[in-house]
Image (cartoon, rainbow, N blue to C red; front, top):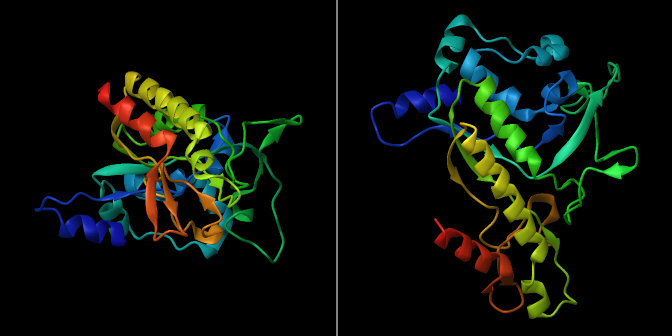
Length: 251
């Protein structure tokens, strides 16, 4: 309900309110397994329909129900949807888990895999969860447009990492051709989604700088700018930063 309260507090002012679901897109983008596992449905559904998606009924009484008043407050309590996208997975239905160790993952009753018939969905980043699948960002944007009444959308995070390898020279560390390829392909599909009517208002790569990344800490680098942790955090633009500079000049 914090979303609704925030929206009301800004109703007569300039700030806008959004929510950004975590990054996970499944292939194919339709079907029970895929839509059950898509985190966007769990967060966006209450803001557009006033209730959780049907798939969340799997958890039974562990999930509190919205009152009628709460549902009314939730509907439309956002100005835009922020979508984070990094990777894709194959999804398939899983049997009910009767384990006492029920969790956010087991509740979904979905099996996720980065391979099908031994063939990877795409190359991996440094993080083991990051399966590169550029078309997935288009699938996610088109699904969001159709499912949530054509909202205004910002891509709030999109990126790929590499390992923080101390053996690399500075020149080698700056030559992030894999990241250039990642952004080139993903932006192609963002443009395709826009051409198909998706209201993408903005796009934010992750990230401008190498930084402390959750449980990975400084072991991986997501930045288009290299941060030298051994030289007073001195910054050096990577090849991907130069590519973005050239890309943006075209528009």
